[in-house]
Length: 254
Image (cartoon, rainbow, N blue to C red):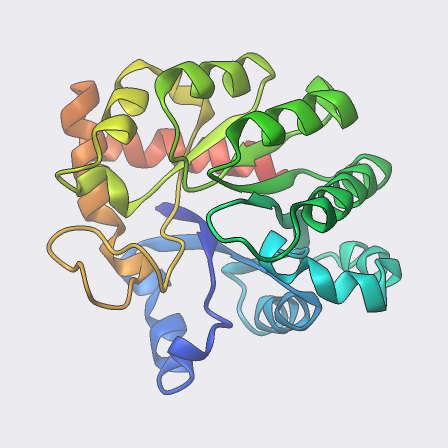
């Protein structure tokens, strides 16, 4: 079975056919998925899906792009969501410097606060990091270090930075970008990294693999990513499937 470690099926991109897609997952070999919140409302929606479908677990947290909402609502709600048996992680949290907004100081403030919450709650964390490698690493090392189990999802940096995160014991999330012609960095990382730290993900509805670029991404497309991982490592797709299943179960403590 396949474990999709990072999805957004609560996203409005699935409003028209969400139930149809989710009902099809298990029959298509997708045994588990983790629906990852990016705000208070999407975290609640992810938890609602997790209570409706046995194959779905949720993560609760606020994406860096949504951190301004925390200036108003704070984080008191996070403890309640994290206490839910269907909540498997805190996330996605982190830093995104690709755009000028939100203010980077606000992003860093709430990244630290959510990391501290994950430590206090003893939960794994899902990290979003875009164009912010050094600050992400510095804050994680300062606040959490090896005391937290973390995945750097949708990894987009060079091998040298991947190794620094791996040296802290963290996981690396890899998805459809691995199949792109410009996915050189991801291919090198999959080739060189320890396989016991590799998580398979879609980030759907985003970043679909070839030949589905430009379409809405689905967990059903993960065999394409698995095949590329298998090619790079000289393994069978079944071996990659088993390895990434075991890794995700270990990471999410399922």
